[in-house]
Image 1: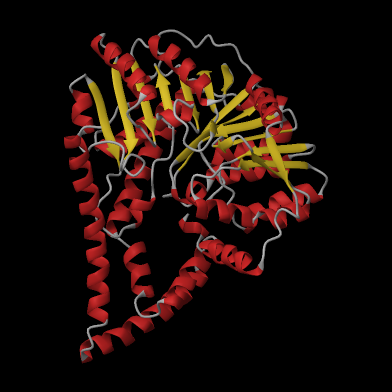
Image 2: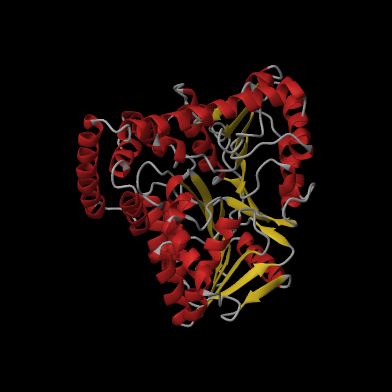
Length: 511
């Protein structure tokens, strides 16, 4: 990292932090300057806080979010309610929501251009119709035949496969990632993109500003444009107290010509392929989808691109089978899905819950974080109590200590209910996979935590009777060989630590 690059990056980030602190200081100063006006202002704000608490309690929202806000307002009764109002009700947030809804509506009409496999699914897998109907009829994501799947784990395997597919690109390459960091992985990919751009292939890259906050310079899109690569930053971080800053693009999507797509937990940074060691061995997972189902990921990308650029995109111009039909042979059923925090419809959570509730024999889960609300805890516990073999693997070496401590606070009640908890002994597991009953699985970007489930833009691929289902299961069982099972005795902690974990759970929606 050059000194000039570092100075530019440092100045930008420090300025943002200082401006946020200045806003907070001004608010506190106005309330506590000791004047008669400030006393009256304080009483008014306390009354506002009381009304806000009543509104929060009556609001249709997750109980954990309600508890967090009420607790904070009780701690800071004077300006807690005002902070909630400033943070929640903003015209910019409403405008952003309308733009998201507009792009979703525009794409929804095109998702079935290749045709869908709904009728075939009704005949072949009727036991999974509630899951399929929810995603297709309500959420708007079709189920496809004429598609194949390939499970790729760890990150090194995905990296090699991605390079091979990028080399085959003839018309366009779309890449959308939460984290992009200069190093062996990204630099290798970038060289391919430069070469493809020089051959006339349209290259587009989108990355999240928060995910790359300390990793890339502000002018990085301009640097890439010099190579013929279009680049935009999703939701640029601004020094304003706004809920939009919470809504990050946590998705990882790569699309080649609309015919091949990748998603999963793997970002474009060296730790994801174990080129460098960050938290021990990094275990991650991805899925490659080829055929009709790849079109869904193409549209997901185009929606976010339009949202970020403001351009009116002609989505249908990128449809890959205008002149020739899709000849990919069916390998089971594939149903890609996306999740937006702006519509209050928790698609990723519902996919997970339906897999758990439909399981008859087993549910195996990989997740880097286990910070969940009562509905997910109840579903996991009920499944285990009903005789389903429920197993969850989390990391033994953490990336965030507070988050790991909060994750461990859920172990006790789950183990008591019969859920088997394991920690990946070799390092950090970043995979987000569910597999059940040798029939169904999902691989995607959604962690089992509040941010992924309710605040971030996410995506994944639900599969039934496809090759990747058994690959996910085999990978999970192999991973268990290098895991340690957590027992009830391991969860026994002294009262101070238990109290600390209980407090952390109150603030879990912030983690």
